[in-house]
Image (cartoon, rainbow over all chains, first blue to last red):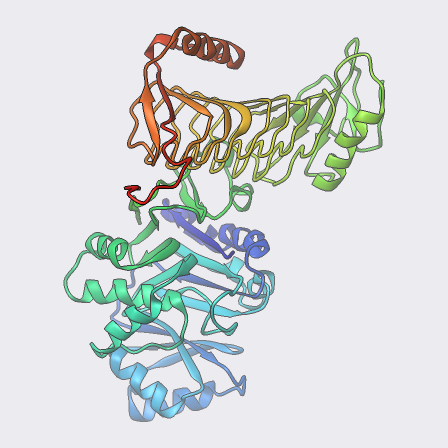
Length: 298
Length: 256
């Protein structure tokens, strides 16, 4: 199984509700994915060129003061860091490739879950309900969020193997389903110098799509390439800085339901995780069709 | 008034007043079951127990606040009127026998799967596998049904007011499916003896499914099912799809 959730808040005055609305969605989908979970939250576009690095300390050794001190000394003197236990967000103007390289060289036990101007990413093992409390998801604000609850079937249960997966900047993807050719996709991408962080099948899909876009494809063109090259079952929910994008494979045997009102667009694997949303009884509720690309803009 | 328990109260008032005791109408009372108060498992047990209480009239149960919950009114073997007021989840009215179950909303996967008899009506749309393996009874979906509607149908009857998705009636063995809208790809793939009637367009026929001319009996069947489904459409506008029976016996040159 696995559950996916997504929420895009249309009205600026409601963006403070994002975390409060999406948390019960994620909690409810714990029934489809109780072993680990994750949530990407996209903030409103900032006026600065600061990048946000979402970091996770596997060893839980309160490493953050040391990370910031050494980053300030060797990479970017102006960087700041906000720590919350094992998770931290580092704010720096350092280009992502450079920053990620430096982190993996000097702090190899740290995961860099995401980099971007607007994305923050939290993922961990445990029931989604525990993550909601641990990372205070209900307090998060932003334009849109992409979440996942995992019931692992093909690779290990670890924070890094949890979804969302990211690639590049401000790009994330969650997946319900399974791919049958992730290894051939991975080999193809690795020959082009693209590095993987886990052996998870979804990471292959994520890096494939982001690679196509880095080669000049639009997201839509990249997804059409994905229809041809990704073999398996999938409902994919993609978050970019400005969009939520939903696609299902041709067989569409992994579920998805969408509900739209004047205030929001909400997506989930099952309607029951949307039932608490305000105005849901009047929402336009529909099931996305196979191989159709659904895009909602912030 | 019939009081079944402190939380299950006979009412003839509006659904949202479930927690308030109220007077009953004459005859069999309406029983409101509020799923925001009492869980699905107790509901299904209560509905099963209706069979043990001899009643002169069909019991009428309204299920409030379904909120997409799964497995509502499953495995009933009693002639009861059940109304689910709102969107419901997976496996609604599964294995139904004798009950009349109406959903005033959408349903998730596999509504009325393995139905044996009775009537299940969905006023909204249904997700995948509606009526899967139904042996008998009538399933009416007033809106659209998604993919694999009527998969492995074994004698049940399905009327869809809107369209059906891909691979509908896949390996359907017996029974009838009437589609007032369009049919998705691979309709009736590997069909046995079930018959499909479609009014709108057919994206593509599945292996061994073929269109056949409508005969007098077909018109009568469609008219009868539309009438029972309370859906208005002209039987003359439907086309018949049935098995070419070429897959019944293996042969080496098969192109499928």
